[in-house]
Length: 263
Image (cartoon, rainbow, N blue to C red; front, top):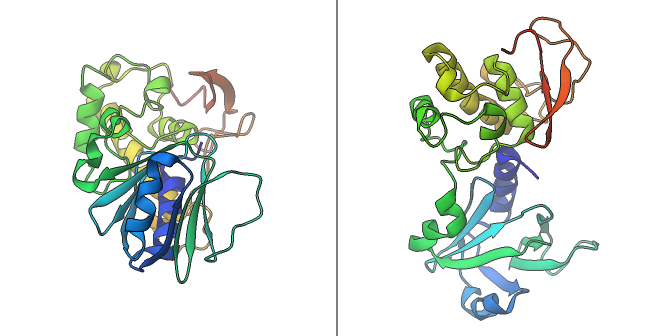
């Protein structure tokens, strides 16, 4: 499943294709959404934004389409009136005169009044979006100390969307390597310095991945292209201490860590 940076880049691409232009066609596969097809024609999409691993497509008539790709859903950008060759099932089509955005295979799709979409059960359950610019290290540190999370092992906690939304397996591996912490550690066992380092890593790694992963030749230090230090590097040298990175299973997912410098 894509993680927060990949979902936000997908949202950026969808928004670039259709935001601000009148819809020439709206089509939904599910009967519960069919009644919105006609009212959406001629309306404009105001924004397409992620929250964790969900996407919120906001229209200018006070409605917002909630969608979650789950394991198999995928959005595509296409020319209007043309569907890419695929074996997937089309669920949503939103077209303008210039571009169309198409959602395939997803089943978790619903239309909500924009002012109430935050009440969606999934959005109620998850924590703050890790890529939200308003989220700061002090807030993340406070969540680490919160009694709901403080006694959880970090290897499982960082996959829990109720803690912080948008983290997944490669990010938890890289965050813990960057903070020098093992997956068995718990927030309640960390000292203030370790807590601060972990909170900073939880924010820095996803944001750096969003800005630069897959890019080459970025010119500034803060935009250094994202590279894995531990993820999928089992048996290779740790960039920090040169010990071999070890692969294991943590919370039923592949995990990679340095046995020497992650304590």
